[in-house]
Amino acid sequence: MKKLISISLTATLFGILFFSSCAKEDSPSPNDPTGADPRTKFLGHWFVSENSHDYGTATYYSDITDSTNASYILLSGLYSYNVKSNATVNGNNFTIPSQSFPAGTISGNGVLSNSTQINLTYYVRTTTTHYDTVTATLTK
Image (cartoon, rainbow, N blue to C red; front, top):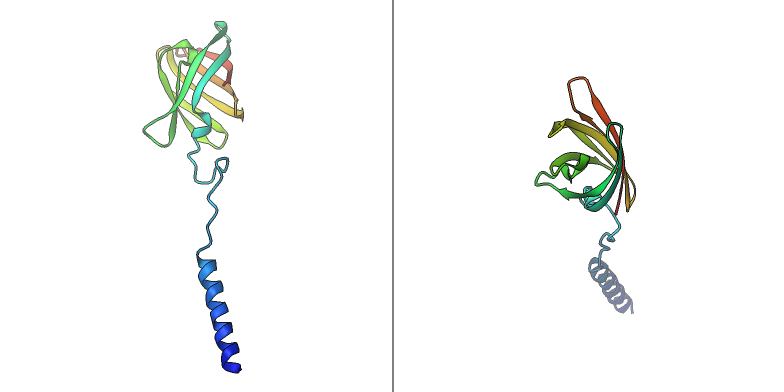
């Protein structure tokens, strides 16, 4: 009888170990940003409504794409120029480091307030002593 109980217990223990080792692991859900590219939430075709201190209001479209460098996103069309400016992403924020631009240099910051809106402030240095301050709302 002891031998039968011992065999049954061993078989049960083996079965538990075998089936628990085959348990399916949960994969991250599509909304789970763990391991996801942090740039993804910024990518897309955005409608821009901006207010320039020098030029007043303007509307246009901008595309935000990823770059071949995994550290950057590329913003096209800012200040109504058909050029791409790079920005680094940190969480729901991005920073446009100072870089050459057709009107001089550009720099700024953006915040993703929700999945369909970005609030952006950027500065265009048009001369050695003048910066145009621009606030913009980007909407998908």
